[in-house]
Length: 195
Image (cartoon, helix red, strand yellow):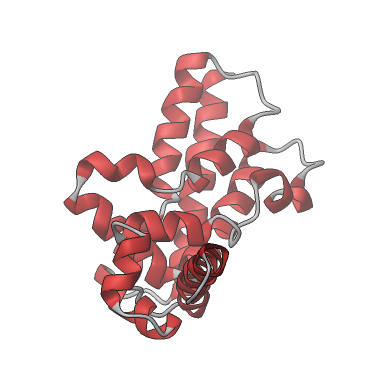
């Protein structure tokens, strides 16, 4: 008969296998679904759902360690005093990661669109990058800064990337360049208008 600590250890191993499988699928850029994660983890789909009530909660845990924090991500432009340069770098960084992990990103968007109450579960990487990129600049009026950040959230998010690739037919590189250019124009215009 298996002891209680043995069962507890098995539960930890099973949970880890499910999270690792989800993380591996996310890193591959492949489509991420609960059945695929379960198959990759060598568990039944029912078992996967016992550990995670939905794909959103699994993705949240699996993606925690996949993306760098904003300070680390923007380290190459840390010394820049040009807000447009910092935003351009942040946009390109974010969208390269969206492209690399698009299966997981699409799954997260899909699950939170169909369940709006879960929208807060989506990682806020774009907002963290925008905030960090613009943190050194206090020249804008608060209302103008808030307007700029909202505009950038539209221009440099995963949704914009998928519109450009899926609906406009751009290559990932061209989509990233287009979004980066748009974010740069918005940033320059905001700072020029407020000066």
